Length: 325
Image 1: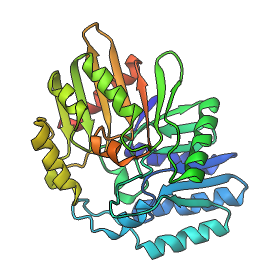
Image 2: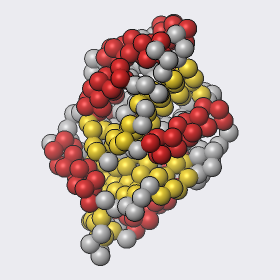
Image 3: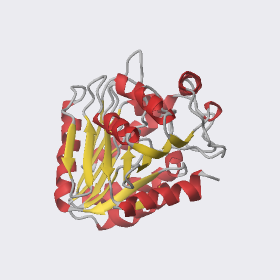
């Protein structure tokens, strides 16, 4: 697996989509046109025109995100929802399949699709936090990329299941990807998360933990983290939009987690690195923010649990170079 910063991920897609021959499939929580993202509109249209299967599966939370003011996101551009719908309608006339799944209720965060997976033929981009929105490629964030036809087909089937079965929860998954990695997928049953459980497991046996997330750790994981030698980096309440800012402030007060992050740039990356007492190292990386709130709300998430030292080092270098400014 190779690490790609958010901006490099955007560049890789812009380079590779024109050469796609089989499929371009994008699954993201937010899928919002505007600003830099508009450059992808002709790329998807042209791919569909030449017979490539082009499929987008976003979450209807995108509609909410398009209408809520974003005072802490700099100069990012998001088109009004009506304009986004018109662009999508044009793409669909060219054969692009676009689906926003789920429903918005009194709690807009409940039962969300929060996974991020992109396939360009057999090249995979996942196990990171990057959504599709103008500001998403400028955050502290990344995706992991690999070329694997078998895994690409497996993830394609998973995306189709997400597309067809929402809002029904899917089965949780723990599938081996080889000797050092396990695919983890939260199917969206409220109160259960194989990703959160795996994070608790690796932290419980760790002597040193590096925690990076958009959100403050909460629940059992926060208590386990506080029992270790840890470095935690997550956005400060002043950097978050309402109501996430209030949740951040409350969780940090309740769980007494020390936040070392001081830089102004928004963190959207989500990973945990551990060093065990026996010398082994673990990585958990993906879309899950490691907050019990997401578990309680029943969000669909994807992550990888790996003991590959090369992957561990790539994320550790990212932490040292980008997060610890």
